[in-house]
Image (tube, rainbow, N blue to C red):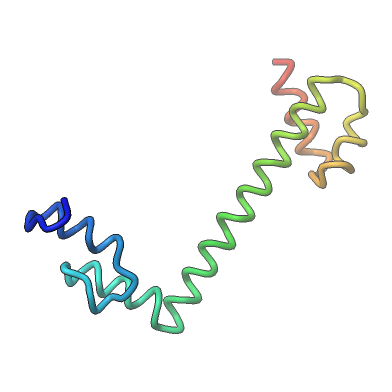
Length: 99
């Protein structure tokens, strides 16, 4: 689409821009400017990324606990200790697995 003047080509070009001032669409460039250049926007972006990271870590802990429960070699208490999950959550996962 390089060299194309269509709306889609302009939008795709905006997604590859690293500077808000180089973007075609004002609404998109204003949001980029906010999240990249303002203190509050950068803080919000950092918080969002931190939340996503924490959700991924929690999801990995759940997945690991489920695998350990399925193997049946450790007690639920040991699984909770090894994964860092609360024992109540591990018990909930074990009950759901058998239901």
